[in-house]
View 1 (cartoon, one colour):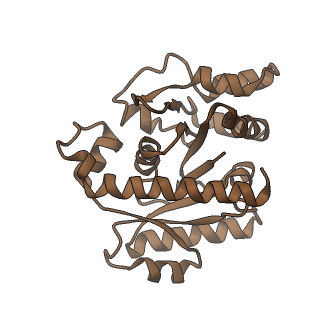
View 2: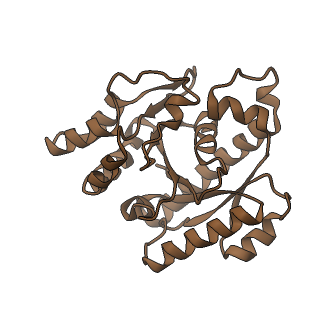
Length: 260
């Protein structure tokens, strides 16, 4: 079972684009969950080109929790199709309808995360798109439950400094981070200007993945732009496939180590 959480400090580094891309390349069936507390609906308005979810989403999950209904089945019922795939299920669970909904969700997370873990019985993993970290930080139950927490950032000084502030806030709150696999960095566009090793040394966290900076291919994932003719062979797609497989392997190793 894998629960992967992705977030970013700010500066539009591409956390949601990364989450969509990794979900599309994930080696097993997967549910991508829009858990952005800002309720930006970035996947619905972007990659899914304004698709109407028909009222489905995390608010309905919260209602099911209130009514003490089993959440594992509710997750699947409330999800819509992210993309067609003959070999795997690629689902999407829409996010909060209003920013205030996230604050009311704190009591739902523990049971929901346990239900997400039990999706392994269906051969399904979970990717949580936490969007940009807010002043309230990352939800502690999510950070604690995820096998892997990835912070997406560019290799610019501005992005590195924003991430440093975010990491300090996490440490100040004493939030446990991610089981055995822990928390690391996903660098988009390494070498513009800093190398991954320099960024890891500056932030005291390992670089888990390096993604190509490929604006044309990224626009398909972030904004639903027409799929480029050579999308599958693009530098971004190749790096996403490598990243998805590596993350799945790391999550599997973490699960075995802690006996989840």
